[in-house]
Image (cartoon, rainbow, N blue to C red; front, side, top):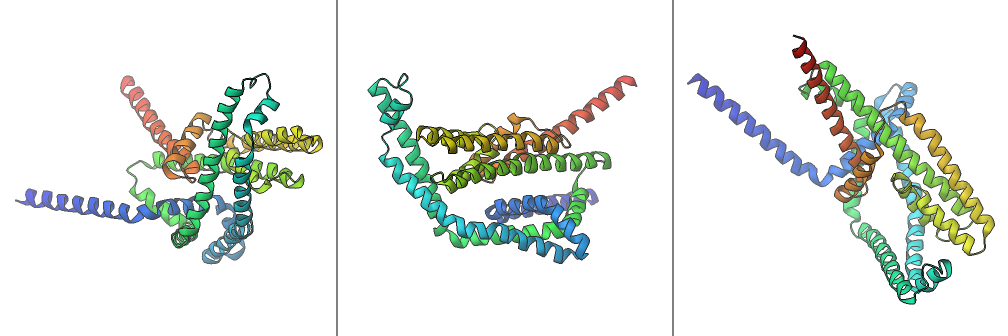
Length: 346
């Protein structure tokens, strides 16, 4: 009877825990992306927090000041640039409707598009693609405005998560360590590898990519390239994705300027683009070589899959999830290898 009673208690406890976990997942699901965004931002700005903490000696004040800095860093550009980007996007959409792509293609590549029918077909596909892309972007902006209360609520969750993860990260990590069913050695390896990979993805790929996009964007603004802000945003996104990169944007812009006869500006854009590439080649190895190197294939698959599954934030979360999986698999492999060697020796 005692055995039955103990077994019954274990079953009830297990069911209760599983039930609460499932309910918690349903509660967290609507704000999951916001929570992850807050955690990632806390990781990025943790060096700044540590620097301020050395001066203030107060976790609350330090986290509050970093939150204020992040708010100003995001809010001020968003407030001033968003209307301009929306306006430029709308202008591009209207201009795309008027462009005769068949004539344009025949003038640029006469040997390839000498057939009027072929040029018209490619022109139709190109025009349709641009129209659909612009429609998606404009619809995204309109959805953002219509869903403003929910967006503000999500941003509030990001801010709260950011603040408390910055302030209480040591306690949170200690709690997670207490839940892990691993030895101290394996635990240490998991946390160190996870930190290195997160650092590599966020700084080595995302931050450096955004820096490239900004450098290229500055050249667009200096030389008055049409729709410079929209193209800068596009360059930032493209630069983060390994298979695209900033050249995906600045090369067509330079070609456009050459065709328009603005050779000086075109060469300047090329110069800025190459400089952005040099910055990437210098800074990325300095950041990534000190940390865990990640396969470009893994980064690309993670970004594409993450984008399709989680939206824009999936560009960051996707590679991290795959990288964390590799950490666990490598630890499991090493453990088996050690076990195999030990048993064979015995």
